[in-house]
Length: 355
Ligand code: NAD
Image 1 (cartoon, rainbow, N blue to C red):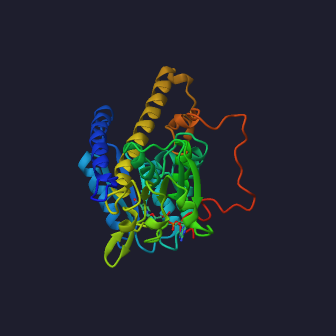
Image 2: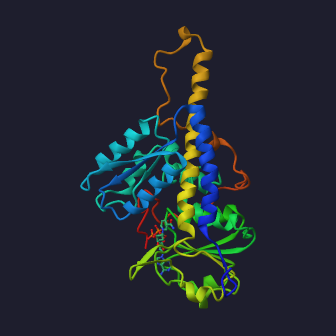
Image 3: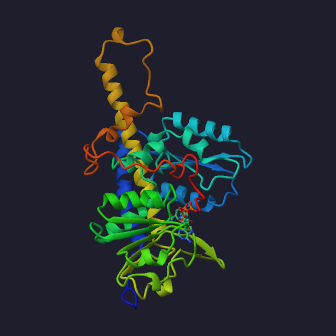
């Protein structure tokens, strides 16, 4: 709680709790599998803007006993060499999860990364299979930042069901997945973006505002409904300081709760990524065990000569949850909502840098 009475939704204490649980899960996994869970971070050139963030992830992994390392490519890497590096980690049984530096250099299309990454190791939820699972309400890998934006509300005990939420930003990595998660939490959701006509009018109706636009000062206190809850996902460097997309000074006078920047969504994002890695590691290990049990249950003479270890492109064994029904929606009597035929291109065509 601040002097103005607004509640600060801080990510760090929640992230610390998550890391304690992750460290226990890592120890359990290592005892059962004889190795720590492994993360590969594909980085294209050490001078990439996200290097500091990626190094933070590596340090975070080391603290909880996860084996994490950079797979480093030259700054002038081609799409082919990036895809080849991703395929190598896909095939490496000691690597359970893969993340790729974002934003990518302008010469590498996200499509090249998406086409190469094994959905079972896609712990930041960029593959269309995981995006599709989220869209249909199934249990795939969530993009960690969008997950953090919603998780900070849940873990702070903010009521979501039945409330009006406005999401500002429609990117494939933050805005849209956050919107689908909020729908799953039973909020009534409006997605605003750069072509929204009257942003303030929409924001004024919202009980919960999630801002992920990359525009410092976009949302001010004057736009908020009194008592609104504000989640600021934005990370912007202004005059050497990291600031969010919300004008914090005016927003705290109107909001009932708000995430600070830095210290809100960011720390939680990294911690949740580790939980995704554990989940990936456990799923792949149990699929391997199931396959090994099946193989030993049969006489060697019965085995097909072509029988082999699971390849990283065989999803059904490893993705049992993708076949489990979603908790609630969608009902099978309702056709899935369709985008209009002139809908914006999907993630593989225009994933980031959406205006
Ligand atoms: P993006 O550029 O891909 O998308 C920005 C979105 O904001 C677009 O959909 C666009 O339509 C919308 N937008 C832009 N200007 C707007 C305006 N004036 N009014 C309404 N909508 C507008 O960005 P992104 O990758 O989705 O990231 C969004 C923000 O989140 C950035 O600041 C980024 O740095 C930050 N981010 C934070 C974390 C974290 O861990 N906290 C992680 C990733 C990204």
